[in-house]
Image (cartoon, rainbow, N blue to C red; front, side, top):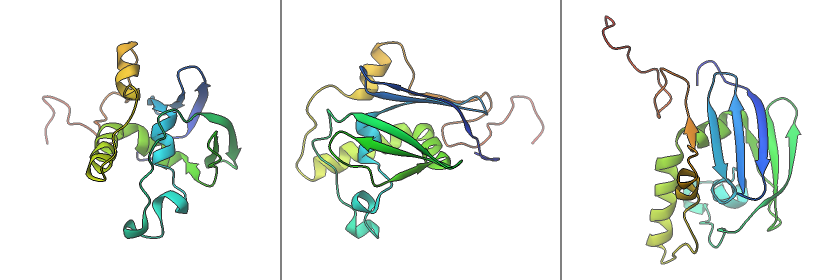
Length: 155
């Protein structure tokens, strides 16, 4: 994401529990509330080091009750389970959107490794079943965020 993209549209879809964010570089992300909650940037979730991070469980039905923009750099998200201590800056939200697949699979693996199983449908599969893509990247940018080579161009 060079230079840093800025959001131009933010929509909370309460019924489907999706936060949709469009950025000025053409990227558009649809992020489930559960995904945002389990990847909260708060110290409560992340810990003060990877060793102190706390695995979030039983967040399948969490919803967002409020969004507040913080200056020109972040969103404060209020969840219905009372969590509201993380600031999601634009770069972090872009990363969550761009890398949703490996991050979500990592979360599912960590749940399984801890002996937990999610209840309910996978929110990303539900999106795709409705014909919605979790991530729409600008042309020429790949899932890792780097510029993809142009076919036939000299390297």
